[in-house]
Length: 168
Image 1 (cartoon, helix red, strand yellow):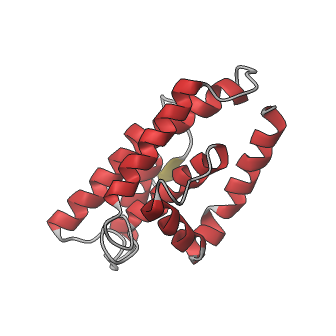
Image 2 (cartoon, rainbow, N blue to C red):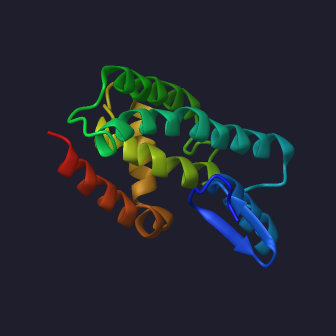
């Protein structure tokens, strides 16, 4: 069903889609009339889409660069180039956070999706409040939210345990 053999993947009747962002947008737009997480307003939606692409193209790339050598190739520390990618990702994200959330004053799909990657990066390189104050405060706000506690925290705990078992 999925030629990339990746997870997550969703099969909804005869429709198959993979990639967490594509699945999230599909589910929100098909199964809810509430557009608060993914508003219809074009400019706000474009910013949410931009943040989702940033998650895929920058945040997750930084995470993979750091984790793959440790988790799959037997390395016992994070490579310096991977650490630089994480710091660059933090810098960009901190600059995006001019409001309470990634796209304005309300939680959107961008926050829910990006926090999974950023909280994982934080396990590798803790976010420095002095260097990235907006990012640090945003992560704290996310940690107080139900979507984080139910949807992110259990997997983050598993990820943290994996890292501890692999890193020296």
